[in-house]
Length: 275
Image (cartoon, rainbow, N blue to C red; front, side, top):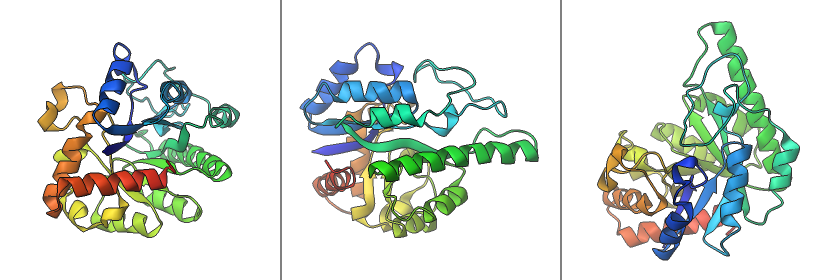
């Protein structure tokens, strides 16, 4: 068995065959979490999860690129879903209502993303502050509901760490980890797991993979993105089944049997998300 801790079958990329992909995934022994990125996809994640007694779960949250701002223009992704160019106003009451579903196991994908940046220093700081405020609000919701978080961090490890250090009760995973071994170790000291996906075939994360504790690793796909080269690479839509290639690469780098990686990372995910 494998557990894809970060999938997006709730995105438009699967609108034609969502349930076909889901059934194929479960039939092949892979469980997964459909991760929300805004209200629309969070609601869809629950809808998909509730059609299955076990094996499919949901997280809810507002990704930083969906923040409503006039400080920067984000590149929109038609594969994700429909949304206003200027983003979404965060309505915590709506997310709290979604969290009433027993299928909701986490708050996420939330965090900070400094990839798209305003051109002036003043606007950049305002933009970062908007994101930090949204992140802290959603961490507060996670604390209130006693749920783990799925953290998105892009070019923002310093600020993410500073915020999480002030939230010692928060637990979760740093999704799609792309930082250094030192940064990974710092997150682990705070009780976080490290999420590894197809990015490990693009970036040199070998030192991180070889040295962090096995009981702190989660495997994920971030599908439909980051397709492993063994499954067709960027020309092929990713899906939860392809998490196998991530697990096999980790096993290879650590000199451990693949079945052991599958067993431990599945246990890690079920422990973190209380499944």
